[in-house]
Length: 440
Image 1 (cartoon, helix red, strand yellow):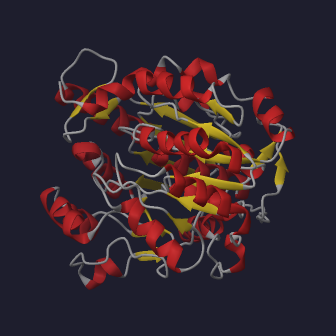
Image 2: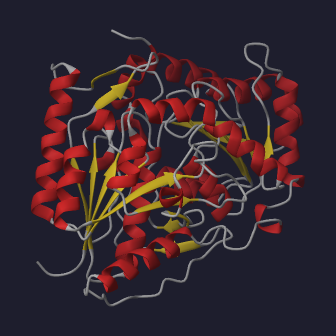
């Protein structure tokens, strides 16, 4: 087999975060190494909606979703979850066996969903594959993460199986393993790469997105996947319903493909009554829409945070605080550094005036670039350097194209990108968002 190969496991029981992060890493690698192939393992039901660069592809394993009570259930197949996980694990292991990766990157879950990657890790360890655990900047508060990792027997895997732990962030923002009693030899495996820079791609957006960008100035309101974004959209709509005359700019709401159908329809009906509101369900090229915005209101997941920094947009972060504090920890630290502003959701009594004030203040808010620490967005280059060093060590040096990362909201031309599908086609996929809210 010619050319280096990287296999990436994306833990996707719900939402878009893991998949989008893995896709950016894959694109960064094939954009740097012209002879490299990258394969992503994912259970995401909408992975096919995203464009993938040449020499990047995916294997979709049967989907599962995580319910509000923490249990898992099959997304599509009428099979119990244990049988589904056995099937997923077999597909993952066989794919790794045939693909023969030089590097295997596991995103977030060290042993995969309920240990489904454990056998693959052991097989590849015997083969000599470099095993890497990739972590976002914030996992959860130590009081929650420590017992979870103890229950899952993560530390033995970090000690005995993994060669490296890459943190896609900076310690100035957060150490995701702070408070975890790590042995010194495990801690020595950690590398902080910086955040993963995002680019808006010209020509990749749908006609509707291009039309929105060409119109009057707008504020982008995004919930990420949208599975728990109903409250944020409700709050913004209240602000426009009660204070619309004092809000000079329109808002473009991206509800997210995983929002419950009933909630989505209810919010859309309210949005249609407001002249300054445009609402859409989903667009795979959110970066292009963000690049055209004058400011952003978002929940503050990892990917959205990277996009805000990369495109240099003033932003108000409204973090969720349940079931994890991940978004709150990130938003709190970012506000203290002056990168973004944080607005906490008080619950059902949320004030329309408070949101209206935050929306009005976006134009006066400084851009993140004015206070951004050096190297904050160097993550993709750092990952490429780490992979390149491993290939050199293995006696498989690769030709390399040094990427010049852009920033500040610029658009890159990418002829290979296809137009995003019509956002309305995601109405059926959104139905399973309702299934997350209650155990069967």
